Length: 421
Image 1 (cartoon, helix red, strand yellow):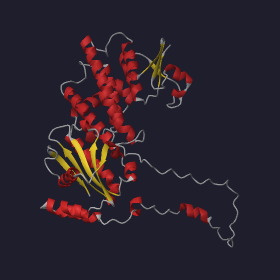
Image 2 (tube, rainbow, N blue to C red):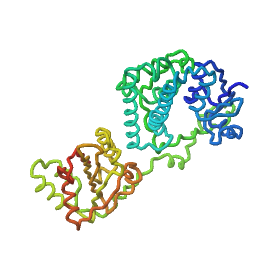
Image 3 (tube, rainbow, N blue to C red):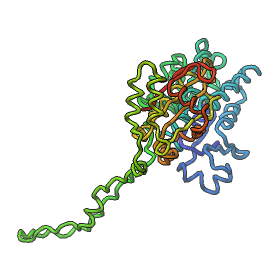
Image 4 (cartoon, rainbow, N blue to C red):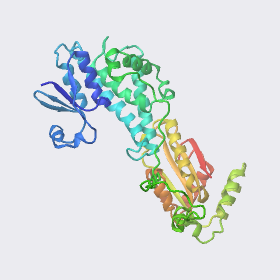
């Protein structure tokens, strides 16, 4: 029987096999009428791959699933080893780069792209980690390609096919020129590969993504159902004397905008502390900060109307790159804009060398952290939160030090300090 690949020719994982087959001269036929999300749920498909993943290759000896395994099978069918290296060492190198493409490149591209288009929850700190990891991978790849045309040896191998198909998905979906231009050797390699005849046969003219896809709204409004029209009636002359009937008033009421509910914090009893007064004092104090701003803060502070909280980032061991850590904090502050009217915050990035520590101090209206902030700002769950005990003088002094950007802070230098006001 012929080799039958169950997938569409738009699937990047199927492309690995189709391109490999072209190089070794093996005929692989795409399954007729394959429909993603339908065909792979049918019992006959599940029998070939119990978890329903695509692609699956039907062979005379039985089915094979997992795209890299399928590509390896096809690459070895002719027995000349042209895609698998000319020595055991080259074979090991090819396997090394296949693993690199599958573990370092592909998951980070997918982890960046899919949450943006609504396939999974978009968490900005997680996205930053994905981008940082991808840049690290591209940096390593670029270093290797600075002195190599192909990944292994002097001709295309299976490693080039697997990596290029993974890069193809990234270049066409999310890796814009502004991102890839930092890695000129990766760019040169990618465009060289996709213009090889055996690649071009399946990829066609490749166009790089011009923009990073915008994040899909978490609460996008459902599209309105179009009004159903009645069956067309025979045309009759309008009678001028008949007034046009009014639309039912109920329908008008349903379309009218509903009054916006008040924020629960606006319903709290009045507080003697005026938050804007504190923010102005903080911003305008240039000298004698302790004597003016810090003293003024405690004079204004109302423990009945406000609460103070320390926060500590849970995953400081990941903060190995300074600019990524700074961007992480900046993004958090931007997403906290929803509570600007009711809060003041200080975020400290601590340490001279990585991993950097991120610690914060927040003043919130009310006795607890506002629930709408916990619900709507994903970053909140990335921190451990601890209410300041005002009876503890050490904790009060820690509050002072954080407001003041005291350095060193807890024995370490400050990399940066950011204020939310």
